Length: 301
Image (cartoon, rainbow, N blue to C red; front, side):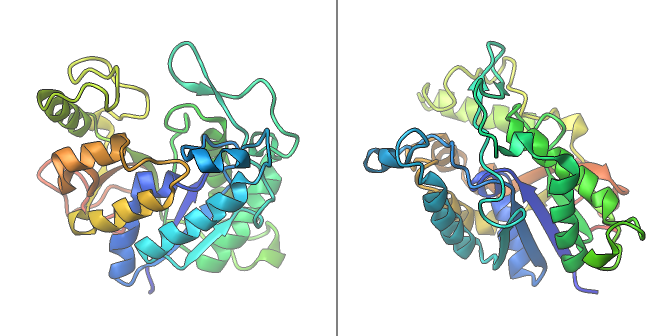
């Protein structure tokens, strides 16, 4: 049985931030890796001044640029099967704004074709066709809050969750192929303990601007997961360089002078080469780390 993993993400760059090392590791092991990106990322912030004209309120061509960046990022990770949900341009980045409580919420004005507005069954059915084609044993997506509240992340969670159920129903859309049950579903996560360790090293080194406002001993933002809720960790330290190359490929969104690179430079491979997960479907299965976490998302399948 060929091992296959499916990752469902909202925008180009989300995959490299969350699971870049895992993806590179599994590719190297000969495991089939499929990425489905739900939008083109048209509403993203542009960090390169020369490309500012691509913004949605100007030329509105950022999605095309981010498509190139995603292609380059996947080349860095070795992933050859990456797709847009329903095909490129089917769903548009919904945008967001910041709530006073510090998490993302939907923007005041949302495009008619925004993913946030997508019919759940329609969007899920696009994913059903991929699930039945690829037939993954494992799927990775976001938690119910989308990590930090971004409407597209939340909708990706809903679509992935519903699609995984529909794909297993024998009588649902028989034209899309044979039914398929995904054995294990995970939500990507970041360890609170690891984050605190990284922040503490940064602060001890005199860096007060990376992840500005985050106190190693204070409250952490919602995209950080308490360690007691973690169930798996994939150790892929030897693939950190590939992950960082993928992050660098998303140049309009991620600066090499930004927090991800600063944290990596400060704490090394252990910082970004150990990626964490919460199990949402299936059974937590040995072998485990000394912390009681699954060592592989495919344990037991």
